[in-house]
Length: 347
Image (cartoon, rainbow, N blue to C red; front, top):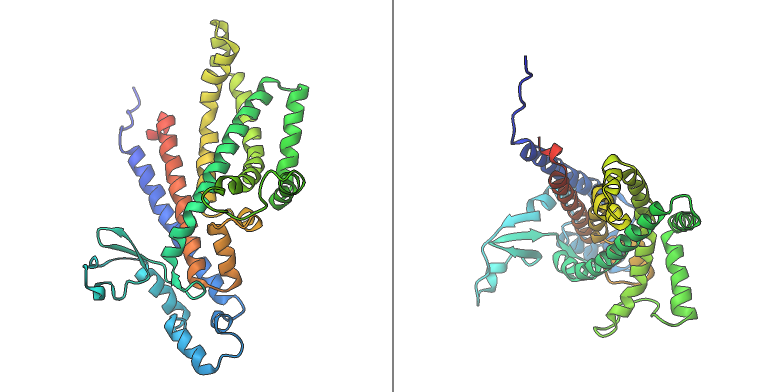
């Protein structure tokens, strides 16, 4: 008797639905933990804002203005209540239409995203993130592109020359690069390329004409540091793939070394590499904290550090939420890529 045929269709939809539900739980968990930590840290954000000489009346008024006088659970519920809401679009000539929504970002269709107001920068957190995110995006895309090019190229070269001196040099270099702290690599590059050779500026973003030169050092730091991981991953995946039956069969049919390596081998080994690249992009979009602070790059990572130093709770929550959402979106993209590249997951 033949076993019953499993029903087709719906598997991919259910899988994505479960991942989306779990992603929402993860975001809520990250925000809850971050909210609790930043509210229970020692120090007083209002005192830091007004200074130690401020009297009690001014402190009480500031707490009321920034909604810090309510109990912790009330502040938490208020954060979620105002986070995403619908509101009428402002009408020309009627400023009252925006009353109560001055700290909101407006993606469109009456949808408002309210991350609160920064007491340090005196502006809405949505505006701060919108201003800092492009710099982080530039750094993330540049670093990830360098990681992918170096990682894939060196990994394939190491796999093709396995156990040779070339393989040993590449593996040794990746071990040294990944073992050193990222700030040590950044300081070394600053010393060599900026101080000794004078090719690149030390830090900052520069103006529009010099922004590309200022971007090179932080991009090199993140790119070289991350390329070590992709080199080792590509090497291991390619060694397994090049010894598989279908690659050996392609060589037996007369396929060239290049075709067997790239067309048959690398294409099959790309799934875990692409998965890691997309996840890394999501993490970098949340802010490369150490690199941005080291090179004074005006991105979300540096913004988050300054917010923690000055106890700016609204900015802390906004950057944490932005980072969590970008990583969740990257995870969902990885899930879609896996469904496209591996038909077995659709059943």
